[in-house]
Length: 74
Image (cartoon, rainbow, N blue to C red; front, side, top):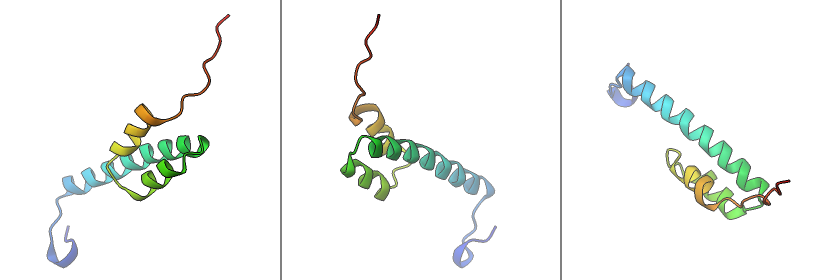
């Protein structure tokens, strides 16, 4: 498949880029939803602006999201 200015892109590369884009959208969507619900505007903006192949959203979800109140056990 001919790309821009005669650049040839292999079908495998195109498939990899599509998979990477879907991966990024899923993680970005989850992280933006969580930081929006937690009213963390700075994180929301950073995740919105920077495309990091899912790394920044995963870091936010694992380490920086506000934890909900601990549920009491009976």
